[in-house]
Length: 315
Image 1 (tube, one colour):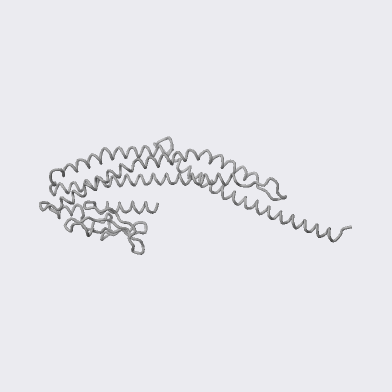
Image 2 (spheres, one colour):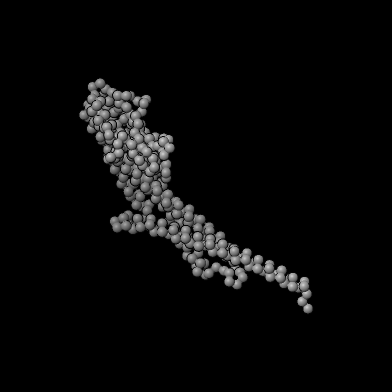
């Protein structure tokens, strides 16, 4: 005979089973959602890898991976800097050893110095692009490591109520993704480290050459104060009026990535031969970045310098 107690116990067991079923189902659904998210991220990583790999497979490209491409280009650029810029800077500085050059000669030196700075800025721009590749690789590496941890830590239930479970197709995706990412991880790590090392080794040379051009800038400014020098002619070359570095942008003002760039004169320098510098102001009109002081740098070069600082700030 079924008693009230038996009925109550049966109801209690049924409710407990239902609760267990719902809890297990919720856990499995959470696992499914986590798995799908992992697969999406894995696909994004794989797309980045295909894009980066295409660089080394381009027609006429350098084989051996992205680091090999960077090594070839950085090596070529460094050789050009050493052979062209360093030699020219040395020859220019020699002209100031015994006396100041004539006004005509100073004008030529200023133009050459600005061209050299453009070459150095171009090299710096190339290094920045390579650095962004290294950052992308580092991002892929971090994502890869996270995905591996996610996949290996997902609790796959071995026993669940009927109708609740993870399809074998998702388990297969886990395995395929994990194997592919594991194979890529070591190579990606080596590529990123190699690129970062090459960039780090190239920057001291760049800084050294820029320092020499700063010395040249100082001696040019000092010679411009010589009473025998035509300062008007010098200024027309070093600081031509209306030269903003961009056609159609008046009053030495230029917009770049949400900032307003301006060229100012240093109030502490000589009024006869003043130094200038570029600044970047934000939407509130607050100066957030300031470029290096220079007498002979053209406005275009000053603007390029401040743009590099903005790019590094945003990176």
